[in-house]
Structure formats: C-alpha cells, structure tokens
Length: 98
Image (cartoon, rainbow, N blue to C red; front, top):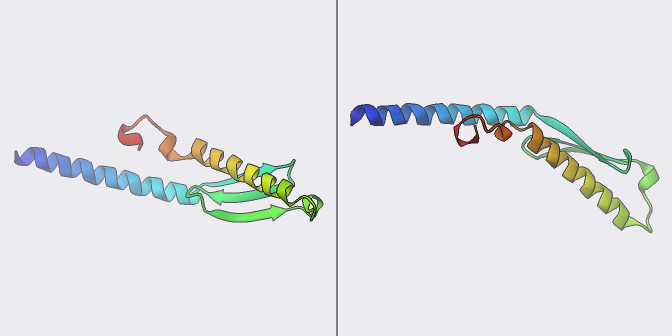
C-alpha cells in the first residue's frame, strides 16, 4: 500500500508542477481585441487582466455613449476568445486538461 500512496504523491506533485507552468504561460500570453475597425483596441493577458484600452477620438460621441460601450464589449469579447484559443488549458491531450 505504501508504494501506491507514493505513486499518487508523485503524480500530484507532477500535476502541481504542470499547473504552475500553465499559470506562468498565462501570465506571459498577451492578446489584443479590436472593434469598429480599430476604433477600440484593448490588450489583456492570459489571466484576463485588462492591460490597456485605447479609444480613437473618432468614435467618441456624447450622443452615442451606448455605441462606444458596445464597441468596448465587442473588443473585450474578442480578446477573451483569443485567450481561450491560445491558452495552454485548451490543450486536451493530457489528463485533467493540463
């Protein structure tokens, strides 16, 4: 029984190391989302932290704040999709999605 427990401990340690590697990869992953043909551009990392948001003055209209909000959301969703596509977690070749 001791060898089975030892093997499980080794597997757990390996999974923990793989998880740590994934976390580091996510920190270094940088994606950009754009909307409105580049009127709104945002950058986020793989941990989904917003790093920058750029809004071109052309799309700022005090009478259409809702339009600007829509562009920001569209850029954010595009960036989230890119994170999902480029995330090491998306690799299903290894157990537990690692």
